[in-house]
Image (cartoon, rainbow, N blue to C red; front, side, top):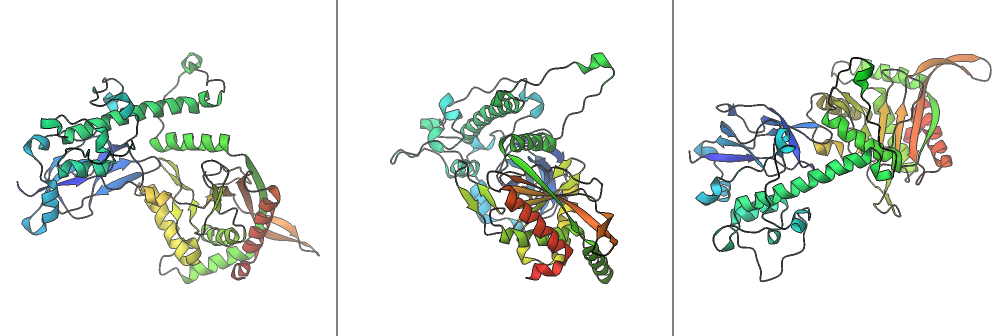
Amino acid sequence: MDNLKEVRVPDLGGAHDVPVIEWLVKVGDRVAVNQGIITLESDKATMEVPSSMAGIVRELKAHLGDILSEGNVIALIEVSDATVDIATSVADARPPHEADAAPLVRRVAIAATEPAEKPRIENSQASARWDASFVVPGDAPYASPTVRQLARELGVELAQVTGTGRNGRMLRGDVETYVRTALSVDSRRIETTASQALGGGLNLQPWPNIDFAKFGAIETQSLSRIQKVSGANLSRSWVVVPHVTQHDHADVTDLEAFRVQLNRETEKDGTKVTMLAFLIKASVVLLKRFPHVNASLDESGDTLILKKYYHVGFAADTPRGLVMPVLRDADKKGIREIARETASLATNARDSKLGPADMQGGCFSISSLGGIGGTAFTPIVNAPEVAILGVSKSSIQPVWDGTAFRPRLLLPLSLSYDHRVIDGAAAARFTAELAQLLGDFRRALL
């Protein structure tokens, strides 16, 4: 089969070491271009990897539980002569002794029991995380174009890899061995970091190991990958960021009436405007007035990075846990467009179709529990952002208008912020002006 082509893991938006959780095709299936063939689970979401070509699946190169990264081969597809890309055919050609190299995968189920493969590189090289020192001019590595391409795709510096081929030539397997060793080191680092997250890194008392079974019947359930990663990130944010929460409420009686009217007018086109769309639009107006809220501290904590773009994240509840899709360029979109895009992102979140890029680059986040209940809460800042808006369930309450108490619909607002960047006075002004905007949305035009 001369027309067998490799399907590789595409750019994962910075994610790596991603497990396979589902195959969407089997050997013999015919697939179309951009048809999903495998499901991977990254730090915060699951994603379908699409086929880059049309044809018949001839071989699956990974198993459930295997760990993949960008550039790994996941399947071989037989394509017709009409769809063969000549350039790809040349790039895929490799010497016979390299063609049988094992795919770069690791089994989750056996990772803890199998001894690590003996590395062909020094330990100091394995811990370099693939960003070791530069290549000395005139000492270029001896490797084929295919191996060089693989190294580039995986971010491996060939000068750090020991070649085992004839005359020291670097083979595909040499690069993969190097990466396996580096990943093994990274896995041990992750385990160490996880133990530190339980208190070791902060010199806190370790979490007690309690045998709950002695008190009664129990059942154990593993946390999802999203819950594990989110939990670690939330713990870090809660410990590192000095949180303060400013509470307020907005009179949204007129805005709610306007929202209902809009939905009646747009009922035929299927667009449902939610309060979230107004909250995002109003937040963008306030981010422009309060640039320190649309900012992040750099790694040292000594420099404030002011952002000139307005990407707003919002919490989406999914069966796998809470995720935070990001609506990009919210300042350039109207209410209806914001409503359509947030609905689409929320649907993709529930269907596990969000990619890493859909959850990156946020400037400000909104977590709304209005559909569930509650009067106030303290959302955790989604670092490196410096503020997050929590919204609780609106309720009818009596409000004095100067002559009498009137029933008004009040929406509770809870702004958690990083006190290193935002002081209490600025936070109070932010929530007060936000309440004014929601009370009379015409102010958003000023």
